[in-house]
Length: 235
Image (tube, rainbow, N blue to C red; front, side):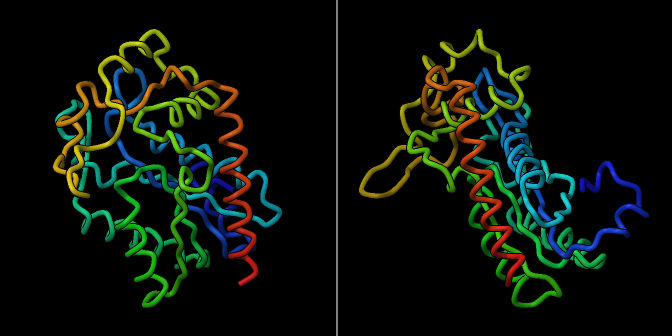
């Protein structure tokens, strides 16, 4: 059940304590992919898992602004501090728990959210009236070429939201992008912002992606999330 689409009596009638909370970001993804890529992909995985899961699952509305200051030099990028982000996630989980949805899997689509989510989910589980775990979809699939706005994210969008991918800009994205993330010397990334190493914010060649690969990635991420939800339901 999706809270955004339900009425309150329908929400009250649920018989589950299991919820998923999609979390992403509003940030640049090169000249070809939308600012909402991380939220859109997290939502797609959450939706697919909800449909595939044997247990009833409540899907909360997504959190669309995350920890993304590293993309600040590209127009449209929004961000909050790690403290604000952690507080927002924690209070959202607290409100879910108030209604009885006390086991919450946060479905994440943004790399900058990973560390603060692990911290806040541990804090929630240790100190609040809920248990929470963070699931980052691209860490649960075979995606060594992840990049940023690269073939992995672009493929998932081509499979789920092809209307938002600017196919005529894929070559431009590759030409002005970077081969890898950061500027590394002696194990240290000297670049704090993506504009320091990528002309247009892209990392990787999105032209190597495809809708077919996106379908496979979605299937793989969905299976991983369903397995996690099944295990959480048993605990």
